[in-house]
Structures are given as C-alpha cells and as structure tokens.
Image 1 (cartoon, rainbow, N blue to C red):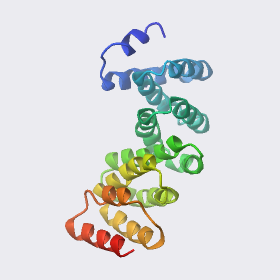
Image 2: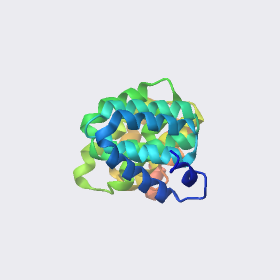
Image 3: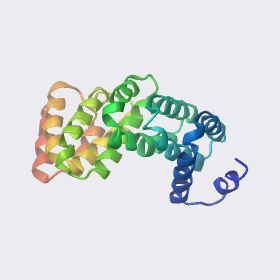
Image 4: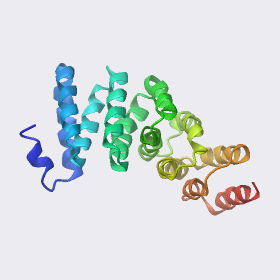
Length: 222
C-alpha cells in the first residue's frame, strides 16, 4: 500500500493502473486471502485508480474462484456508490468474465440482475458493452451474444435513468457489432414491454437507416 498510494495520488494514466492491477493479480494467486484483505483496504481509500487496480487484479482469480470475485466486485460497487465505480468493475472484471468465463459465470450475472442495488444491475449492461467491443461481429459468438441479450431482458423495463445509461450502453454496442441479433430482439421487446425512449435511442445508434426507422416506428405505434 505504501508503494502504491503515491502512484494513485498523482496524475497517472488508466493504462498504467491496468498494468499495475494485472501484475498484482498474477503475483497474488498464491496468496489470495491476504490479497483480498489488501483489496478491501484499497477500496476503502475510495480512489478512482484504486478501483481500476482492483478490477484488473480480480481477473486473475476468475479461473479458480468466480463466486468470490463476483461477491467482492459487488461489495466494492455498493460501497463505492458512484457510476464510475460500477463502470470500472463492469468494463474490466465483469467484461472479461463475460468473454472468457461466461458458461461458469452466467448464473452469477443472473444474480446481479436480480440484485436490489442499481449499480450491481447496471454493471451487467456495462459488461455486455465490453463483450461486444472485444468480440466484434465474430460469428462463433453469435449464440453467446444472443444469450447475453436475453440475460439483459429483465432490465429493459426498468424506469430508473441510472439503469438506462448502463443497459443502453450495452445494447448500443451489441447493436453496432451484432445488428442482426439486436433488431430481432428489440422488435420482440417493444411488442411485449413498455420501454424507455432513452433505451430505444441508445440501442438504434449504430443501426442502418432502415432498421432505425423500423424500430422507431414500431415503438411509436406502441
């Protein structure tokens, strides 16, 4: 902590914080319990760079201890209680979990979506954004992308604006790289649910004009 705090308290790039977190994670694998204590202390400092370090370090533990990692990420997001804490863990730790360990962690994502805390729910939409950005229109990931859309379904009807931005971000990026899946999905959702106009605007951002008009008109008629 003594070595890290000076770096966290000066102007340092997120790229450097990511590198530090990744290195800590690799070195920490043999001493997990001690490092979780360290992450708790670091989270209590409430420093933006500290959350980046923790989120990046947790990725190293996913292979062996998914549940513990999700539990700690949830704890830090609730304690941090800010959008940037949520998005830091969503775009880093949870994003990598969605890409590399989805079969093992889907049930954990499901629990996040059912959680009472809005930051925990929002983080799943941010993770979906990261997944789509990294798995650009890869046909072998079509099935996973379609399943992620279904995973997000309970959040589509949320009325709180704090959800709209996070979930809309995920839908928007999925629409950019998996437009064929998003158009079919949104048509079904619009026909069944009352959806926020904010989410509609975000999800059609990168669609072609024909698809944009089709979804917009369907939404207006609803």
